[in-house]
Length: 315
Image (cartoon, rainbow, N blue to C red):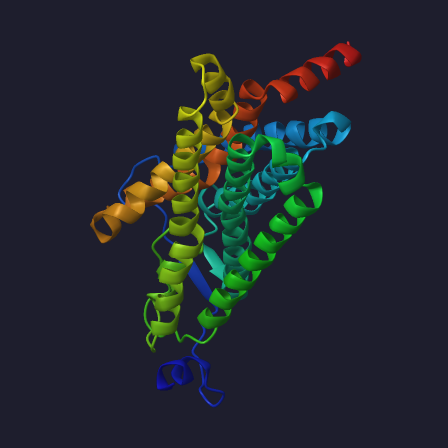
């Protein structure tokens, strides 16, 4: 109990800085071009996800449980990019690296909440594909609108509560040494390491959040595709197997582009160079929201048909 009393005690005076400093890249000349590139990625992301949201909203044929998850994914991508990239541009392009204590924690909360929901949406879509292929005759019974909405709502609640707890523990830390955050945004791990009092609760929670928002979702997705592969191996003809697997290609593409940069970062851990870590994590944060709508428009037949209809009507 002493461990948590030191972090949650009521009679302790905490030293909170007026501001933090976001360091960004170190030793890289003309690194502003990278942030200009992120600005381009952000513009494409906003346009693409807006198109997906509008298409699903306008076409009543896309009001299925699967597209409830796709709609939420596009919505989260839009909000997540808007919470992260404009602030990055303000910090590094306009040299506003000083960020107030409260604004930094707010920045952290929204960034991590939306990043967590991106992963949980991939889990929801993975479950959708698992039931659709393994139990096609019972799909409409097991995966209903109500179930998908409840699943996504529970993911939102879980993400918000977990990140609120993380932010709450940060407010119980004292910062009496460095206030320079060695990252490209208000990164939870980089902040609690700056504390000069006991940061063990935040350290334990950080490990739990990695498991909750990264390891468990990835494990579930991998196991779901193992089951899908086993189910497809029982299908009689190769043409039927290909047709069934084709419905998973869009989701598999999203999983690949989202998890590979994170796998590199977490596998190499402390051995990774800070600049490499910033590039990996920033690309994992902004590239999936840009590529998700492109992949779904190009690889999902229903959305392609709807987009063509809308363009014909407009013409």
